[in-house]
Length: 331
Image (cartoon, rainbow, N blue to C red; front, side):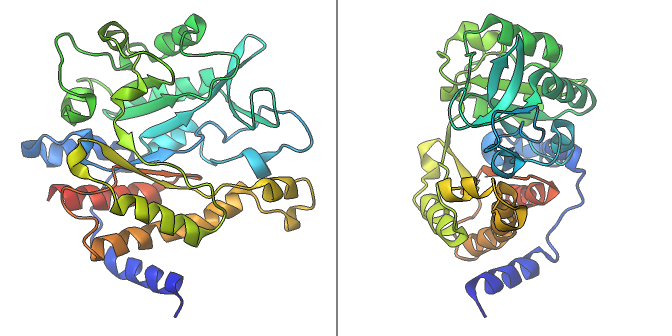
């Protein structure tokens, strides 16, 4: 039996009786209610993260070298990702023709494609938060033609989100990740916190709903590899060296990355190309077995879990993995 087959078998056995009935769209508020006596915080739970969250659509591709094959990292739209339970989003804005889009490009103006229109993405976020008392993390970075100091971009976000934008309460001194989940949402809907790459950390900006990444105290880094066993080895090694006593959280970045050869293969016949989706279909089935192995070895245990699972082509399966880790940590 190969290592992969063994891991898949262990995962199937471990998962057979441990899942809790959960509505994926409301899982965070359900966790807050179920463990109300614990007052769980973001540091107590695991949440799914969508890598390059806005690339479920191609609004414009800059050359014949760019297509969904080498730029598309998600299938579900923003609303569907939220309904599936995803609670953190990597959003990369580009300004073009007085409008804003997400992008997945080699460099600003380089090869790649523009993804979803940002106003549409934000509108779906607002609609979801109007209906669900969930807390959502939006990481805004990789700017092209815009930035954290772009007043028009900030106004678009602030106006679209309205009361669903999380702003720092007056007199709050606790780190964001240490505030109870029940306090992060409103009585009549959810909230989204926006972290802007390159933004200074000041009380005034936080009060306006503009957070610096320094407040997102999460460690972890993507692996620039195309082989799933190398990905597993590198991410596991990083988690093994993680110290939860540091006061920081851990992100397991479970994505394979096209090298130049694979990206260029997308120009040719589809049957000869290896797309980002193909790589995700190699990596994603091994996520659960890898987590199970870490649990079996005691690396994952109460008080020491990966807090973020970041993947391409998110769906409910990654939410289910996060829920297993969350229950393990809180029970």
